[in-house]
Image: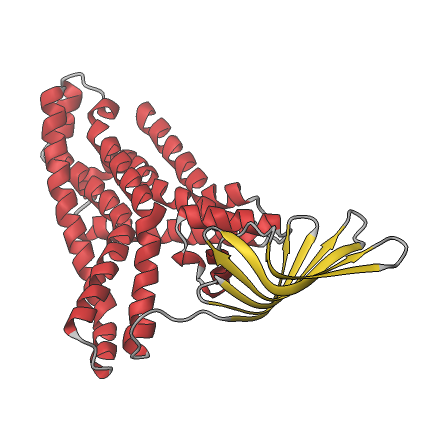
Length: 362
């Protein structure tokens, strides 16, 4: 079995690399034609275009990896079948399911690689491609965009409500701030008004303001201050999410953002669906190969390059349609976030088990 496993693995890896390069080239050419015309019309520097397409290469690689694994599985099994090697394996008393271990190993490798890429690298690639295209090339700017938010209100914990006239300097400086502290009955206990709320050395400080306490008998107690530490426990980056696209957030950033929304008692359904999808989608590569194995064994002789490509494209489109449907149902509240993200994977796994069952009976 070790010799047979090495032989099948060598053939599979060879075809997988050819499929990956071919799909990368096809996707890359189609994806680049219009963008190059747009970049040249804006007189973009060659170096900047190179940076854009380097990040774009990572995104395209992430997208074509599952299809490359699926196509290479179908083609390899087709070649083995046409050369009567699958028949020889059966004649030697070796189970076809055991002989397909290299295919399962390839699927697991692609899924783990995709999962690692999707954890931080792919969101960064999306962020950089959008930044280079929209800011550096289309707008002709250099450096980062200054993010400023006006007239912002947010809740912190169960008792504090903040209002700010402007948030600037990447969320580190907040101008004209008011903080209302309420009790469990939502009665105002005290408030703070300050000219600034600044983030320095990991802590927030009110600058030039006053604190007004409201007693139960209706009397007021007013105290002015030059500086007062704030109970706010947010990071400056939390105030930049409003200007950030969801696909720009890495898994840790998205997890932090969901916690921030929960703390502010805001809906998190959409973001939980996205977070679960960042894990579910990379697993598709393994499941697609799992589904392709019994199909390739049964129909291997009939699968040529053109037919294999067509089947792979059809299955990939079908998966993406079901996956998108699941996400939409999750964002709409019809399904829970976990089920909606794994909806397509559950269907593919069920179809794979049915095919393996039919194969074992034949």
